[in-house]
Figure 1 (cartoon, rainbow, N blue to C red):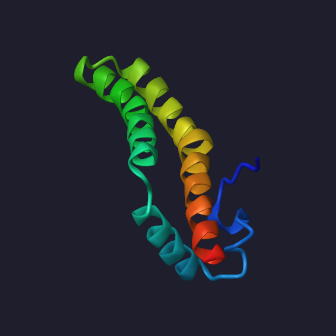
Figure 2: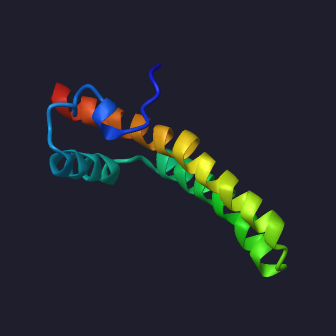
Length: 96
């Protein structure tokens, strides 16, 4: 299974412009199933809870560290999972 960090890495979308890729990804994301949406929303919660927790307690050094981890999680876990889910929807549409 390939890991995609950008929409231009997806073979089905590499011939399109940036705007067209965004539109295709939006269409694919509208077709996500409930479990796929649940997985993405849980990942979002796991990313956002620590920075808000430390921000509320005003522990700035932990806030900065958790914010950096949030960015890492977003770029290295959340985005590849979302693009992987989107690719399956794009493939399903192309097969029909």
